[in-house]
Amino acid sequence: MAKRAVVPISYDYIAELDLPIVNEVRGEHLIRIHHSRFDPLWFGPDTTTPPSGRFNAPDHEYGICYSALSFDVAFAETFLQKADVMLLDISDLSRRNVTVLRVKRKLRLVQLHGTGLKRLRLNAAIAHGEHARCRQLALALWSHRARVDGIRYRSCRDNDKYCIAVFDRAGDALVVESSENLVADRARLATTLGSYRVALDQ
Image (cartoon, rainbow, N blue to C red; front, side):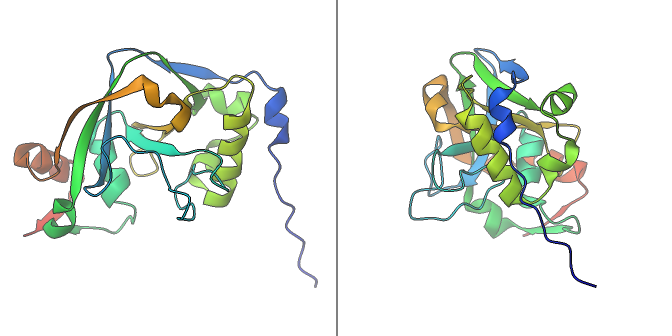
């Protein structure tokens, strides 16, 4: 029996919708864990690097900065991408920084969770599905007349918590409040490792 052709999904209809928008207000904080070689506030990837993140622009139409609303979920998104991870190498952690970003002005974010999914004619699978489809959706949201600042979505690794993907046009809304090596605060790190039942190979 012949295989059924895969029909590409189009998100052109997004342009006609009123987007579900939530706000992160001035004074709130976003947490970002990143390679130490990158700037604390960095929108990637650069134009010489192909997209790899879930909401990266398919053809470098924009840059994006991934962050979270808590240290725990920023850690989980960075190091616990494989569900069977039980042991982490401290040398890998030592090559990362944790940066706290303060919101300087209201961030207008597409609500890619909860009731926002229905308003976008989507379901929760989109936020956890194929990256290629997520990138096409993100491009449609970025291109929308509302000119939103980014996307708020549930973490794939800890779905009690939220992540924030900020478009580079909202760079003026964020300021670096602090940035330090990830292993500098051992008490914080130990608490997070304990929460996820993950050990550290020292």
